[in-house]
Image 1 (cartoon, rainbow, N blue to C red):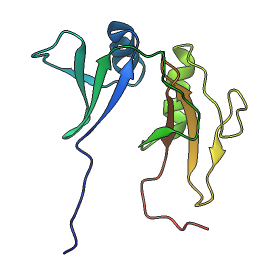
Image 2 (cartoon, helix red, strand yellow; image 1 turned 180 degrees about the vertical axis):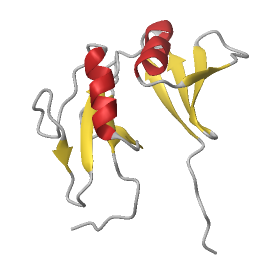
Image 3 (cartoon, rainbow, N blue to C red; image 1 turned 120 degrees about the vertical axis):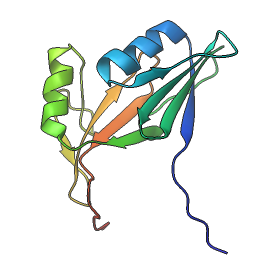
Length: 133
């Protein structure tokens, strides 16, 4: 039997919950969901039913590289880049050039930012089917 999947949420271990919530709300524009339960947990909505789950804890053993990232699509990459630049947030292309966007093999443009703990986030304009090559 073939199943149909869609994103529900993803969870990130963070070293400082309030700092991470501020980044994801102030910089990326996610919306906090009312907290219930543990004080070291925050939920934010990305849009629709898609959410991010931030969990404050011991971040010491966490190893991050750009290869391990999550990606979000956006309608207007140029507007996004202008917005985060105005907020003083550095962005990169895949090779690591500061202030540059790149183009994926399938023709879609992308930029990378890092959150306060160093998680890499790809923002791209993949809003229609593409061809992988």
